[in-house]
Structure formats: C-alpha cells, structure tokens
Amino acid sequence: MTEEKSLNFLEEIIEADLAAGKYPDGIHTRFPPEPNGYLHIGHASSICLNFGLAKKYQGKCNLRFDDTNPSTEEVEYVESIQRDIEWLGFKWDARYFTSDYFETLYQYAVQLIKAGLAFVDDSTAEEIAATKGGINEPGRNSTFRERSVAENLQLFEEMRAGKYADGEKVLRAKIDMAHPNLLLRDPVIYRIKHAHHHRTGDAWCLYPMYDFAHGQSDSLEQITHSICTLEFIHHRPLYDWFIQQLGIFPSHQYEFARRNLSYTVMSKRKLLQLVNEQHVAGWDDPRMPTISGMRRRGYPPQAIVQFCETIGIGKRENLIDIGLLEFCVREQLNKTAQRAMMVLDPVKLIITNYPEGKTELLEADNNPEDPTAGTRQIPFSRQLWIEREDYMDSPPKKFFRLGPGLMVRLKSAYIIRCEDVVKDASGAIVEIHCSYIPESRSGSDTSDIHVKGTIHWVDAATAGTATVRLYDRLFQVENPAVEEGDFKAYLNPQSLQTVTAFIEPFLATAQIGTTFQALRKGYFSVDKESTAGHLLLNKTVGLKDTWAKK
RNA sequence: AGUUCCAUUGUGUAAUGGCAGCACAACUGAUUUUGGUUCAGUUAGUCUUGGUUCGAAUCCAGGUGGAACUACCA
Image (cartoon, rainbow, N blue to C red; front, side):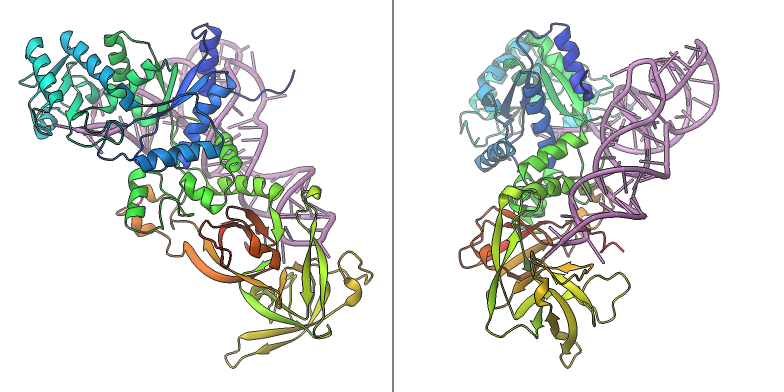
C-alpha cells in the first residue's frame, strides 16, 4: 500500500462519477475567464483546479473566454490571459469564445420562445427592478408576459435586426415571479447593446446574459464538470433549467470558495481601479496580486502552482496568509537561485592593514544548495561596502556583527576586527576601520578563530550600481475588503521604496527576468525595464529573518 | 426577515461512524562561512445544546455565528 493523498470534494465527485460509468469518454473541464482584466492569484487557483483535474483523470480542459459583454472586454486581456496560463505551465485542449456560439445561442432563445418559455419585455430596467420583489416579497408579472409566440418571435427578430435602441426591449425567460430564488423571477436573458465586440465586430447588437450563455456553452463543449465559485451557487437552478428546457448535453455545475489572500484585494473591479487611478504602475506592477505582477516580481510559476496545491479547495470563506505564498516562493528559489552579494544601504569599510592597490580574487559558491552550480570569483581589496545595519556602536548581547572591537567574517573572504569608526559632524558614521586576519582566508583558514557572524560585502573599486525597488505589502490591513469606507484608504504608503545599491561585478550583466538571491537580503529579479547600462531590480521576497523579529 | 451555503489549532486543509493528521505561522534546541537552508522537538483545534449509537468532527434536531442572493455584469 502506498501512501494516498486524500481527495478534495471535487475529486470525490469525479471519482464517484467515473466509478458509476457516467463519462466513458472521460471528464471535461474548462477555465472560463471574462477578458475584462488581468488574471490574479485567485484565477491561478481555478486554473490549477480545472487543468489539474483534467490531467489527473486523463480528461480534457478547454480555455473559453466568456465574452458576452462587449463594453468591458478587450483583446489586450485575451492576450494577457493566454500568456499567464501558458507561463503557469498549462495547455488547453481547445480554445473557444462564447461569442463563437452567438448564433447557436440565438437559436436556443428562439426555441424557448416557441416553447412559450421566453418573452420580449418592453419594460425599462427600473420597471423590471421594481417588479422583481425582494427577498421577503414576491415579484409581479410583467404586463408584457403574455405576448403571443408569434409576436415574441417577430419582436426578437427585430431586436436582432437593430430596430430598437439599447434598453428598449429585453428577452426574458418565463419562469416564476414568486420564486424564492430571485434569479428565477423571469430573468433577462438577452439585452440590446449597440456596441463593438472585440471579435464579432458589429455583427450583433444583441448579447446574451451570463446565465443564458455559460451553461449552454458548457453543454456545447460537452463539459462534464463545470467548476465555478460559490457566488454562482444560486445560479445553478437556472443553469440546469436552461439545459433541461433546451434538451441539450447535461453539464453540471459545482462550486468552490474563491481564495482570498491577506493584505491585498482580489476583485477585478478594485484592481482595475488601482491601475486606472495609478496607485500602482499597471496590471503587472510587482505589488499586484496578478499573475503578471508576480511574474514581474520574480515569483517562479512552480511556486504559484505549489501554493495553489497546498491551500487546496473548500467551501468556506477564507483568508489565506500571504506568508504561505512567500514560503512557496522561497522554497522554489532557494533550490535554484544564483547567489550574489549586494549592499542596499552602504557604509564604507576600510581594511587598514590590507595593502593599498592590491586586489585578489576570491572564490564563492553560486548556490550552496546545488553543488552543480559551481563557483565564481569575486574581487576583494582595501575598501569595501557593507550594510549600515551590520554595525552598532553599542550592540546588545548576541549581536553577531560589527561593533567596537567585534569580529566577523566577510563572506567568502577574511575575518576582520573592528578597530575604529569615523563620524561626520552630525554623528553619522562615514567609515568603519577594521583590520583583517590574513590567515583566515576562506577555504584556507588556519587562524583557528571562530566567529559567530558572517556579513556580506562588495568591493568598492569594482562595484556596480543598481536601482532596487523594495516592495512591501500593498495594504496595511489584513483584509481591506471588509474594512469601513474606501478600500484605497488602507493602501500602504510604504509599499514601494527605491534605493541605489552596490552590486558585485558579475550582476551587472544579469538578464531580464532572472532572479537571484542577494546573500542575507533576499531574492531579487531583474525588471523588464532594466537596460545594459542601468540595472533595475525588483525585490521578490526577503529571506526568513529570525533576528529582525526580536 | 425568505432562500441557499458554510463552521476542525492563529491561517489553510485532511480524517466519509472507530487513534483528530498535514502544511504554514509561532516557540525550543542542533548544525551552519547567509541570524538563510537543513535536522530534531514543543505549543495549539472539532461553534453550542440535545438525540441516535458499543462508539460521533462525521448521522439527526434545535440554537449560535458567518457568507451569498434583490445588475439589461460575469
């Protein structure tokens, strides 16, 4: 018996269906984004679920763009969505657009009209809302509800032909105005919209509503398991009703709880607002919870997939600790990232007993977690840059760095002892003077001195510079969505800080998109706007820091 | 208030009538030329009240708490 991973509730349903022989041709899922925004980490969860389930059970998964609302949908979004799915490592079996089915859907509507199950309503949107009733009162039938089939057919045809203005008429399903589920109170299924569609152009001025398009599209593609988020649970009776009345392939809808991440927002409306009002630099700003933002920040796709698998799926409200995502990112990067030294907040360190003008090359591991990564050589000389926070005038106990008389090892180099500091008029430290121990050279240390701390450094003579964007959480509160007032009031003003850092020489040629670990400081990724003469880095995530916590 | 859904350590998720487990987080300790990694360990949970049962996180009933629904958005 091998150890078996427990099943989530969807896997259980699928295995039961398969065991019952319901789907001899295998299961078929789909990922159905609306091309009206960029994909975010919540979508990644759905992508992993739909594509993952298809793969696990040797089924198929389609990509279908749910493009029934031309006023918000754009080609730019279609392209970004495809790019993101591919980057995550998934391949769709077929790609469709709901707009591919516009003619079929129109014929389905005609079929409903003929069966006396749909009617053209001349009421305004306000009138329809007013007669809808509420959660505690039934709605009232529209005065147009009893039009003849012939009249409905003719009016619907005229609607398609463009005879009416936006909002003048709608097609509604005829179900039950007293139904406790508000969605079944004669829902609107077609509305007039004289708008240019990104794919069908001006061929239509009539567009189906989600409820009249989604289930039928699933059915046309023979989707067996149509997985969506919890808020669609009330739509399921409608989904089933259309399929049943139309007598088409019975796809079934299943719902799971959307994933929420702490310290960010996940609604496309809010993300769009952040972009439009320039609180961030764009959909792919590294602070955004979008797939493209995470890619630009340096998150490896495997980390996102691992995260989605780790959090699993369920049906309850949730707020997942962003720390878990960061753990997954570190876990992936730790195994693969090139190591390098970079000083973010520099202070000059002078090794007083090291000869002026001398430079030697020292050997350093490219990745201690991966012996095959080899080593590289880094220059070392009398003047170095070290991190300002690695020195303290009066250090507390257990501060394993520099202070008056204290010793540390310079990573891959020598052990040094702090002898003196030079301060300016305001008392700020301008230079730290140390002596080094020649026989403590890394790899051939015969000094027999053991120090607690090791710090990173960069040779001042050969250092390059880089502009580094340090990112922090986008919001100051755990769950901006539930706070009072405008969610933007909770944005973290410190979410982006830019510094100029010193880097060891080889980093200057780092390619766009590569992510490396700056020793002791975290992971950094070369931004797409980086140029040969000007290195631009994004902080991907810091290292776990058990010292800073104290 | 009507309908629907949900409730397991701080967070997320398992246990499908039979030992409440896993991951993250937190905390100890060991190792470490990254206060990283790795390793060993600790803390901490079944919303509540009844019922069924030899036995309930699981089944039933009531309560409590939370969420969703009243767009010509998806």
